[in-house]
Length: 367
Image 1 (tube, rainbow, N blue to C red):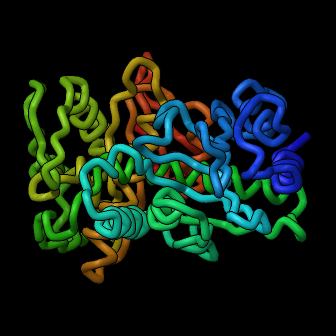
Image 2 (cartoon, rainbow, N blue to C red; image 1 turned 180 degrees about the horizontal axis):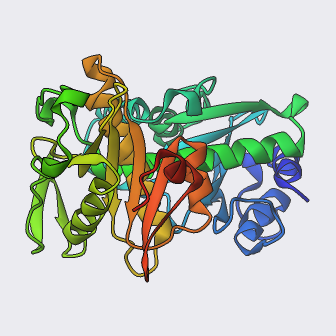
């Protein structure tokens, strides 16, 4: 049984008037999903069905969770298949947790407005091509405040008519695609810098006459290796002692390859590279320390920040968008091809030097 079959069975058997007791077919099916291991969900993701607690929900749904982001729908970002109240359709949606936020608002409309604002903010920072064709706000027509909150909190969604459900392969592909968007959105949601908070830095390019290989590190002024605090839109990030040495080592390595590494005046960007022969594009480098072997988290943060900085520091200012590079303290494994799919090269430290993805090698930025 695939996701498609599960959704069809819920749609065909769910009865709000039957309650939530054991023995109610659709409720039993929804409760069983958390123990299922045979369903084609993205690697590492878990399922949990919801048909109500005490009283049956007018809009049953199935949560699809990445444990690295959240395992509960109260807070954070997650994926969900939410049925309309008439059970004629089910919508795959990237959702924000609404329960905890609800406590901050006495007026429900204020909650819905805030959820819409946050969804719009996240959506603006996701590459347009990843969610092109997806709807922004679905309609569930359910009773109570929750269905309306689910509508307002949706970042991207795909509606399926139960009477004309796509093939399992298509639904699996679209779930995987939205899982990728979830990873990017989670990084965006953690960082979320405002364009207005970024420094207005002139971005002139280095031409042949201006490039002096002997002074290539002149514009590179790394911070010291002690822990330090960087504030971006009231969000405080503590950067460890491994972060700056990683940038410095890489900068010295690519300088020997003919690139000019620059950090001065580039905050909050980690590093910018310029070539001896300028082609109008820079290399934007985002460095990440892989903590406790959690490559997934490091890659997500890196990808989200690269897209944000490219958008606000280049595209919004009418400048040529840069090449994108992720710099890591260790190999990112299978994520190297994932990053390249999004146009991002990766470089990482090894025991005896450096290694990089095919794109990084082709650019000549692996020391």
